[in-house]
Length: 79
Image: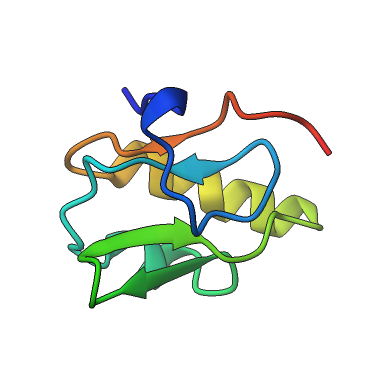
C-alpha cells in the first residue's frame, strides 16, 4: 500500500498521489493518461492532475488496482 509520508514531491496536491516505491512501469499512464506522468529522470511516476470527472476517478482507481508495487495512494488531503 502507498505511504503518504513517501509521497513524491512532483504530485499535485490532492487525494491521489504516487510514492517513492514506484518502479516506473508505466501502467498508470496507460490506464489514466490524463492524470499520471512518468518522470524518467527521477524514475517514478506522479499525479500530474487530480481527477475532475467520474471517468477520471474510475481510471485512477483502476490504476491503483493494477499497480504492481502498490505505489498509488488515495489517502492524501482532499482539495
